[in-house]
Length: 262
Image: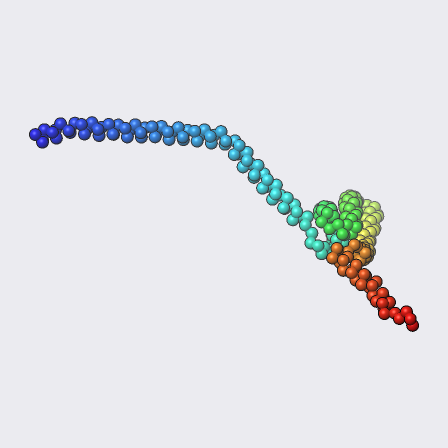
């Protein structure tokens, strides 16, 4: 009897297990579908926002690059506070005087132009020395103009040297000697003129330094004078008022002890 009951209960248990397995499989299938739907939605969202994210990244990179360029530009034109502004014109004229070729003259002019740009930036960084900086800029601008003149003179000297060489090849000794003498004279005059430029710059540099020192001294005196006559703070005004009041009341004290009968 017990074995029969067991045989009758076995099909029922098997059916329940099959039903549970089916339920689990259905749940797994639904979970897989849900995961697929989620992945598809996530993919669609990423594709939808991809252009905006790329644009934001590009914008951030552009801002970073602009900041780096600004820092480089600031460092390029940055000047120390103890800069001697007259040194740049002196160096430019010294390079110009030493130049023997057109390329060297161009390099000297390029140096002067770079210093002009640097000093123009220094006008905003150091307004106290604005007059001194403007004088240095003017001297450098003259150096650029004189560099152009020297380049033209060197070209003319090269042409004269070629004419002299052709005359020498043709056995025109008299003409060759005249051309050589003329060429030497022009070169000597140019060197004298360039030495004068250098001395002129040196003298102007000393004068500008003296003028700047005078302006600085006057500015300090004006600041001291302004500080001396400036309105006092409320605390100082109260103390000054109290001191003045005490001084004014002091002479009245002996009057109380005056003997009228005397």
